[in-house]
Length: 289
Image (cartoon, rainbow, N blue to C red; front, side, top):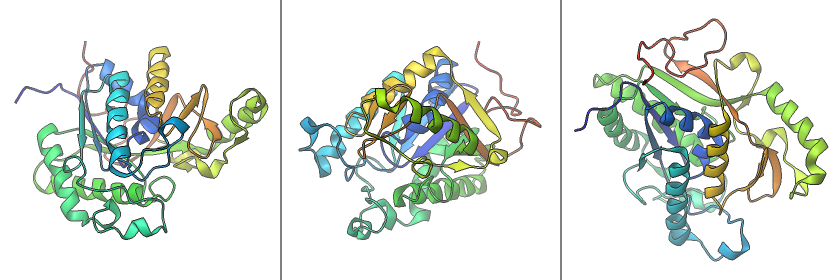
């Protein structure tokens, strides 16, 4: 196996597009710095709603295949080469929104045995040996069953990998500080008349909003990472409409496109009294020259 770079980052997400919305700036920054960035996506999102009318015919496996192509395009925009589907393409089906009959599909992620699915992720951890892993909080950010299950799988995989002697030094959950979200929505309210969206989303539509004191780490974007994130989100055309600095999902409700990304460290040692500015802070691995 080819020797991997000194710094290695693993992100675990539920559907194509989650990674670009939550971590696009972070992924672009670290890929540009020579970090080995690995993305594991747990489903193809084949039960997602489709935004553009010209693609409305896509559903089921056809939509999943199309979203896989969108994911590849998004990763090209972010400079990420190592993209994997948990257990291989189609191993776990999209579970649909919470409370729908789709949740009962025996092949969907929500019905997966957590230890077995985590074992598949352990295989990736064993191969890549990431120092840092990023995933969702226990509510999956906003209560989607696939996000909740992805959290469970990722956290269990970290436990199992540690038992095998492949520890992940730091685990972060995706977060947004409440004051940042409130300020962004206040600006959105003033600018909404000039946007291609009729209404604004609410604070409850933003995944992972928490009180500011829970934020341990922030990754600030630069010009190229801002552009890369927006391009990656545009690549997910079945799911997202981008009108910087805002975007909308299939509900056509505008929400902020954050170019600083925030995290809560939940496993490992915090490297600063204030907020960290580097997910690898305190690990003693140098940035690539």
